[in-house]
Picture 1 (cartoon, rainbow, N blue to C red):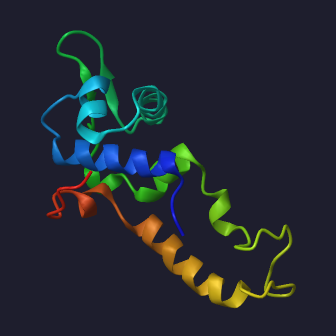
Picture 2: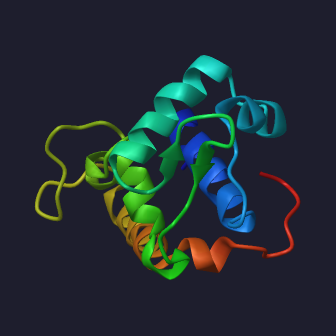
Length: 137
């Protein structure tokens, strides 16, 4: 299971900003530092800003930063803003109707893993990801 590319970018941006809470970063600085396509980044940052996950300040000293407590920003919130969480409950083989009563061949195995992934998404905060030693954003 992989996140969509937009969600990967969103998580990378948010973790980077979490690790640099005292600074503001322009879209161009984020683009250069994180190697996220500039046009893509602009749309992404607007979504994150509209959702209240980042603050944007205009002007020469402006840029993006996180102003919320990192322990209150869950991975599920970031995922939901960018791609929505509806796909995380769908059948892994793409069947429109897949349930315990009418399962596909992978239903039982996937359901166990899906529950674990869903729990991780809902339980993990930016505080959990901040400065965990990783140098990759």
